Length: 274
Image (cartoon, rainbow, N blue to C red; front, side, top):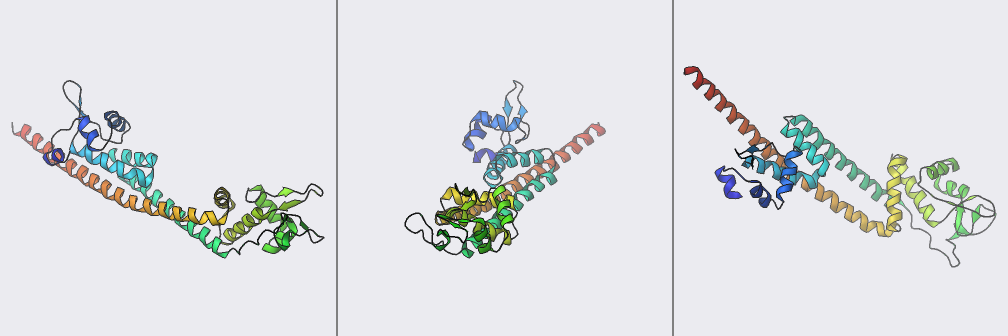
């Protein structure tokens, strides 16, 4: 492949495919999807590619881990259609999303740091003094809405709103029908409270609470947050690589356009002299 790129020879689909670990059908599919420029055809109808197609394919494969297959495809189609500004807009959107993800991660980490340690569960299913049965609005194994709202410094109506948004999932006391918040609900309410104080909307908080539940609590989430950091860093690096490959493709594409323009002028001039 390197020799073909150096010499500028025409490339067969199999040359392009092998050079990038793909099947020839994948190369054809990318061309049909507009990810690669249209190939020339031999008199017998066979596709022939050029080093420019190899550059386009390399750029696309570098963009996929950075922006995802769908966005990477849209970027390449925009470039090949001469809509470079649209391609740059798509790239900007991905960078903005990455920044939003980083801000969200910092907010979650900050919220977790601000949470007080959960009171250890007492024998018999109780969870500290807030779970003791008594006239103060407490129920065995959980808290009623009033005491929890008071502990967080919010109104009970706010907790009911959070429940409708899926942030907390209290059970109902079988005797009174009142909402009862167990240890996990208290944890989720406290985390939601911290994020709301950070300016996050309920629809932004809901998936974060879901991650805490899926992780099985805050401690397992610490490992998940480390993985989250790693994924964001990898995506940021991939964006750098994708940008470099796309810039190389754009420069070569523009350079080829200039050469083709000059050649066209020369041919036109020769016809006129004749």
